[in-house]
Image (tube, rainbow, N blue to C red; front, side, top):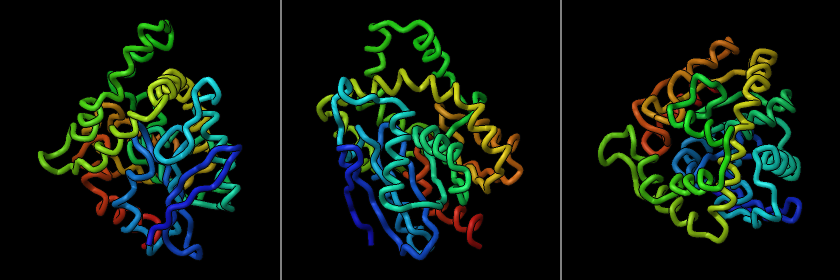
Length: 281
């Protein structure tokens, strides 16, 4: 049974999904862009007998509060701070961490700050290496180094319906991706102020790359058990990013799946089985 809850953090309503028994090890599921915790709708039932699962929506995403970008700082540092306070509020002290896409720089900020809290890591297309960045990031580098309003406006296409659908379907077998996930994501793009807060985060993403050495040092120093379960056909975060974890952490396994950026849309059962085999069996 999945419970749908909300708690207040600094005046923000943070929505989250919770499942499994609290006597089981906790796993926190950090979602990516342009999605929210609904991206774990198929994974949670597969894991709820073995883990206590927590899947929050970040501020500005899904069902959580979405303050205007002029009143709330939409940066990855700030969102990670809110997630830290969220975990403290619901009394999650030690946990496995599942990170996907945007969830990686958020989750690894927390792990780097509180290494003893991390029981293990699942990274699914959750990149923290320059060698894992696809070609599109070269264009973004130019934007970050030479920002203009025109360039900022051009990134509105990142959450156009066709772009989101393409992000879900690229690299997958025909007919294998349900429309449920991307249809809901597209609906969220229609909410008030969505574009401006997401454009703020796209610009701030450069600071994630600057923190890659910090994240990598955390892995070298603490060597947590880590499994990188990667959609190998993802053009945004290419498989080299999964393999790179091995360079810093000997306790790493890599599983490359024949799918795209959103592996849970096509391989949720396989992902769950790999997690259970690595951390439980």
